[in-house]
Amino acid sequence: METYLREARRSQESGGRPATSTIDDVEDAAAVYLRIRPSLVTIAYRILGNASEAEDVLQEVWLRLHRTDRQAVHSPSALLRTITVRVAINVLHSARRRREYCATPWLPEPPDPDATPEAAAERQDAVERAVALLLETLTPRQCAAFILREGFGYPYDRIAGLLDLSVVNARQQVTRAQRHLVGRGRRRPVDSVTHRRLVQAFLAAAQTGELARLEQVLLNDVERPRSAPVGRTADA
Image (cartoon, rainbow, N blue to C red; front, side, top):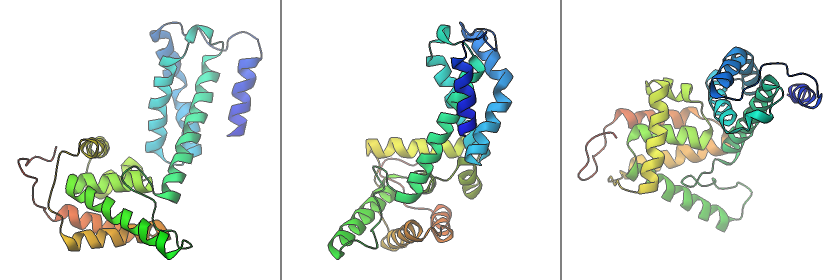
């Protein structure tokens, strides 16, 4: 990774002739991007080790290229490689943080085994309340996709395989889950057994890294229909 950064930096700082044509307009930028895209995918994949996440990185690279002052770019290919490395590293670090801390605005950190009994009890209570909110607010598929993605950094292709969805649909499930959580517009009755099983599986996965049980609990809930929210029947 450092090699890619050094090469890109040397290309930008050399002061020599541009390695590629200028990218003053969108068509020029698209032409350069498409020409070197295969090498960018390779760079992202080497860093992340996941083809789906590498594709996500390339989408972000294209968006960042659009926001760049392209008239000031002397070596578009070097710039794109640099952006790719930085975005991929950010994704890698973000995934590690999700796996290590398992915390989002709706999924708090699990109890620390070294914490005081009072602190552990507070954290466990927070997890129980968070899981209850997810079960009340989300459909089973949305809940499963959200927990796996936001809680444990699962790639979308893995989520899609588990839930028997397309990758696009898996992304939509997470997006819809985030939207419903922000709006707090849906409420379903929560079965106490389902809640307890999911809390236990969530905590065990967060503390031990063993995810098979969590996956099974989530999939069982997907296969078992829940009561629909008042006034809503569609899985929107």
